Image (cartoon, rainbow, N blue to C red; front, side, top):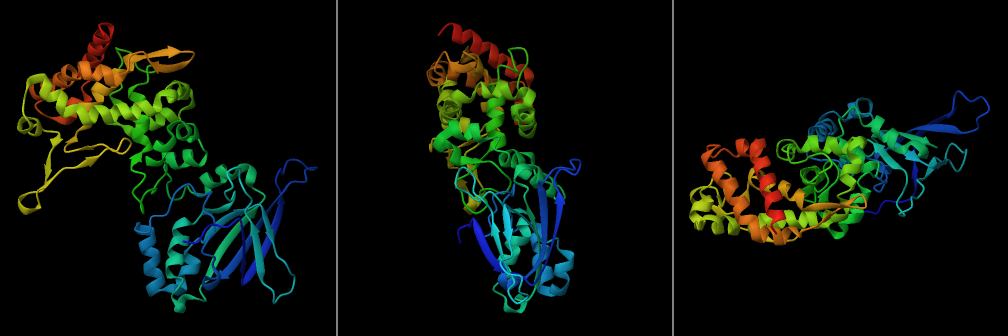
Length: 407
């Protein structure tokens, strides 16, 4: 794949440009916005237009792409008028010569503080992905592609991207990522940050980013003592990860989350530690063997039947530990959420007053045992009922408060 370029030059077939004042209500204002409308032939479409301003990655398997492929294959003559084309943003647009025979355009996308192109493709990512796929088809080489380029809009780039992407819904995490709201989380997580999916369709073509940002925010929500005390339980971490994200997106709540950022690496490590030790804690509680543990509804040891039956192997994304079972979050989250009472407020940030792994090694069997007992005896082995039980979450919280005082 060719690298995205800060400056691109290509040929067009037709072009028109219009100029307007940016601040229409300021008669003396000199700042202008230029909009350029171009038709270019598919054969001249660059393969390396920057996609920096686009809030999501294209999914070539999505229904809109399939429809575009079908049109291009069966009725290509309708494509130009039925497709909205590409919408780009550039810092500067140059037409080198007025000569009608020299139809070149140069786009300077600028450069941000990280050395990436500041402008580029704002809308039309799926169209662009499809066109690059069919570009090698010589029968389509003369196909006109409509391109709109706005020049001078750097100051409201994210607003522009948000507005231009509302016809096909863009999820809020993609817009938050575009606005760099996740940057403090990325900075704190360090290498762990590479495992997080921050925007829609990220990770479709590679498997390094495998933990959705909503799930990470749900973990933060479960430990958010600024929002949940011993009488108010964060069961939403189990029942609604999207709701957790919305709570984080609400700036009124953001500070309560930011207080947890200093311990964020240890939060994901603790979660995976609890996950990997869950079977050991269960066995230590009542001395049961692996067969009984695997027989609990919500714990999966094998998948498939007959010849297709395979042992479960789960690779925990952050620590890289492998476990041979998959747990329902209904079992692990009530215990994990109770660990928020091991935190103490120091100068406006949360830190561990008791190391959570040490606490779990001592009291994890009792907490896990209580979860599995309640799951079997009180909630009829139904993981959903277990995960949504505020009473169970509160019992876990009160036990942790009591145990931590005795540690």
